[in-house]
Amino acid sequence: MIQYSILFKNMENNSNKNKILLYYKYVKIEDPELLRKEQYDLCKTLEMKGRVIVAEEGINGTLEGTEAFCNAYMNHMKADPRFSDIHWKISEGTEDMTAFPRLSVKARKEIVSLHLGENDFDPNETTGTHLKPEELNKWYEEGKEFHIVDMRNDYELLVGKFENTIFPGMKNFRDLRKDLKKIKELKDKPVLTVCTGGVRCEKASGFLLKEGFKEVYQLDGGIVSYMNKYPGKNFLGSLYVFDKRKTVHFNNEKSHQTIGICKKCHQKTEQYVNCANLMCHKHFLCCDECIDSDKMGKNGVILSYCGIWCKIKDIIRDTFSKKIKYIPVRF
Ligand SMILES: [Zn+2]
Ligand SMILES: [Zn+2]
Image (cartoon, rainbow, N blue to C red; front, side, top):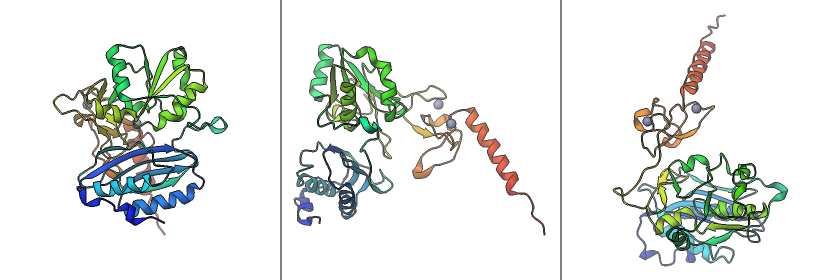
């Protein structure tokens, strides 16, 4: 049962601005289905939208709500000993609470899909050394030798990444095992894994240790914590996020440096679109001038063909399906 008195404690001090919470915790969950139901009821009560994934290995969530309800949510979680020490990452929400189209709370096998199967392990036992943003900043300032292994997907790196990033990102986090050969020469060197909020690194850095990497660190609180503390420093460009905002940065517009490049004309842009050919649906950067389709996808996603072949295939398919549709039937 939800303790409503805890939820609404100290609410009068809060504004009604919307906030976005990002958090995770690897901790043994005895009954994921029960937690899923509790989380769903809690988020519904607090009128929050976003995604929560629970599994036997823990919980991972990103939610938007009013500041008052976000505080109520965090109070509720802090009262549970399993979640009392969660590192909350809080950022500005949208004006009209539309960062996420709906609320989704799911029970799954893993809180991030790494698909290690029988080689899966508990990151509370094996994981890289947590490196605070302040320590990383010091590494940069001192010119220490280290290599950043970015554990995000390749399209996320197109708009922003750290200096010293040597790993070009993966097609999918599941590819980690296969892609590790690209960095095998770093087994004896200091490597620092990074990802958006830290959840992917808990497992990924542990996996590197298991694969024989000797000096493995992970960025505590993820890229978002570093950017918050050192806006515009060492992390170039913007951070990709999995909601309507698509990208965020914390420095002012004047000093902001755009590193994203339109796939078609190579002008600077931070606009992501999806390929209008639904069989391809590639997620890529495309500037306003190069959008060649006025199709809108679900939830306001902009669609544009990623290349001429995707466009041609669609035209052929359209023509073919129209022909089939208009075969006259007479009795
Ligand atoms: Zn362009
Ligand atoms: Zn395409």
